[in-house]
Image (cartoon, rainbow, N blue to C red):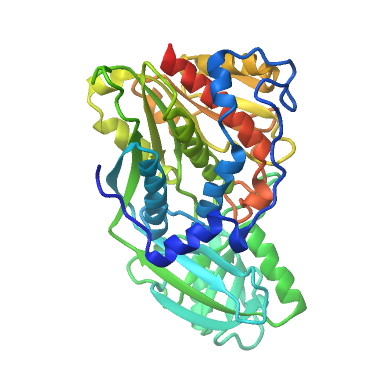
Length: 469
């Protein structure tokens, strides 16, 4: 087994405390139904096979939640190639290693990242401690402190007489971004916080690293950062009622390496080394500032829980779990993995079950979507459709629907059967929950253990059926 990166001793102690409840306890109603009983929201009573029952009586969303606490609370945002993603890879690899899997961390290079941290002094709201994006064309690796001032659109008329040393809130407008930053520097402001335009509900804008191409050669002399929509409204609400001092620090993360975590079940006695493979996968990284509870902590912990359950069940095919790094930067991890696979290894893979956002608590997310990059059914979609029918959920799943933009695409591009599975709005897979890609993608605001349990049963039954066929 390749040695995987381990978190520091302090991190390990904190993660253990979180996994055991600790200060980060999150109370969610636990799913409660018998393995052979009707499921909540199911249209029909179940007609389970013995293999379905083997899975259903063992999987536990409550157990998976303990891993999710570590990922989304203990570690938080897991940005591709940075220390936070590396710590998450170490945790995931450690869990799979203890389960008896042969774990390999597959490294690959990724682009530089530019991040910032906003925080308030003691005595002010403790929730104001946020990761946001930093401009690569402004001052990096620096820390400033100052009172916040709302400069609105950032024009001369929006400024009071003196903004020296102030941290300015400015509405982001692409056409004027460089002019307003230049004015802020000229007026001796300490920093600029760009505020995104509100998106049409239910979508909300994410934190971002503002691009200032006009300053690419000579970076701006002050830090410039971009916050999320939820943070924009929080900052303006706080500022409307009180003086608001902030500390703002920026960091450049360069020369980065991200990792895929690949875990192979031990080969069973007598099994051929070149036998068929069934894969269950998810990505474990996040966008800037998002704790990533549902996207895609939920898919990650589904993999960890199914790894626990399937490791002792008899199979004919080889079972492999894969947790992708740097998906949010353009499917980089899964594309790297597929590119390194010789054709003979690609040909062994029967199906890839990619789980991306499988547990949202958003009420309108009542449809379980089967998303195929080419819009056609394949072994993965067929097996999940069959599992949904046996579990009584068939009316709640979508038809096979054309959509990429997740790691199933990397496999389908080279002809490997794969699909993305997730809970989304009834009318369209574009209907994602409001906390998507935002600081509000937390366990408390965006996780349903009931939906996670159903996802575990659907994917567990489908993957096991594939592996024993």
